[in-house]
Length: 148
Image 1: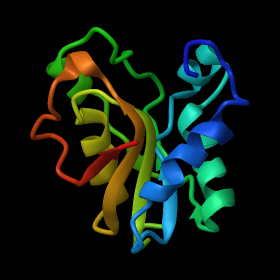
Image 2 (image 1 turned 45 degrees about the vertical axis):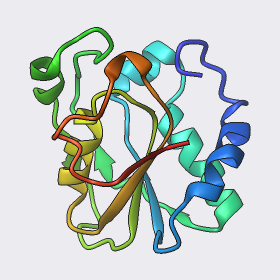
Image 3 (image 1 turned 60 degrees about the horizontal axis):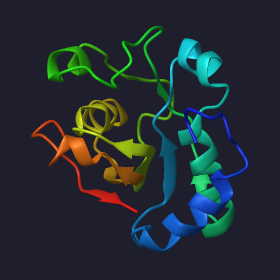
């Protein structure tokens, strides 16, 4: 989805992910891409997944996280490069029942950083897939992660 800029498949992927939404989830927060990355790929796949999940599950979507202006692409980089990029809270700092939505779990560093920025209301993360080469999530992923 990311590399082919195929936005239409997001709804089908969301249908596969929806049964894994925990019952205590109240709001879906996509893990955002930087503007440069969105322009490069043509889509923000996490936003598309969150919107599809929102329609299916009847949950609110909040775009309360903000990606750094430029982020080093994580594919092919080690932990140090991944940790150099941090998310910021855009608004709504007191959200509860936050389920972070992302497309791919690699090492968990991105999701860990997003969870820190989103605050105490994070109950977990839901991704469509997990990178096989990544092995297990690192200690940076301090929230429950459920790859669909």
